[in-house]
Length: 268
Image (cartoon, rainbow, N blue to C red; front, side, top):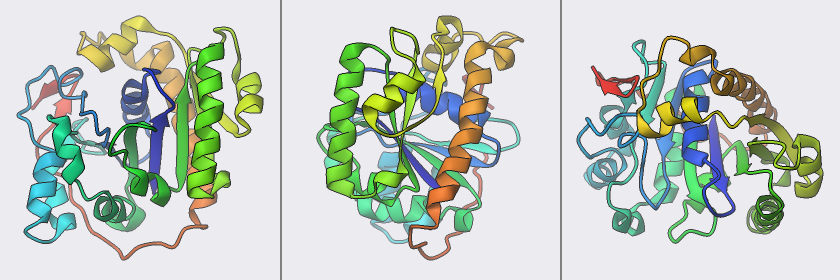
């Protein structure tokens, strides 16, 4: 099941939100960094210890045939069990123009015949080389937004654009970062005209673990951010599953986990 995260503009925290959701996901998941502006998880959460590769290497390997069979070697573990994995994003944004998003979308929508979910961080909606094919193929498209007047206004424009381009309004949802600044989930949902699946609180200490590789501490898993992420992740799985039947499933693809691990920002 493929789920796309994107933003209207600015920096509402799509990557941090996506990583928090992946670490809290109730079943096997791959976090795919598809932002054409480049990937940030390894530089932050991974503390820069993993060599560049991921999406760029995958695109090069795919030209030699069999994108699906190359995917397994580009996934890094986010936990010891390999239930949560990462497809690192581009180190050089200039490579985005060469990525075959249509081909990639087909593979990501059918990881292990749908037994593994994929949360795709697609970045800013109007960015050059935005992975529109991934958004079109997704079972759910989630707009990550702040709760300020400026953020909500940009969000309403983005939702209208997504509806116009994609024509699948039912799969659209909102995720609020920092509710109450000043608007809440209900008000934002009414303004956007879509369901708001939940919100993630402003939790600078925990967010720094995800965005900058700060020490997690033993209570990190019980932080306000991770507790909220678990709730949102569970709701998002249900929301996407309810709409997935509207899509025509692609051919089954088998993907296995790689041996590399990124845990607490470190590779083991």
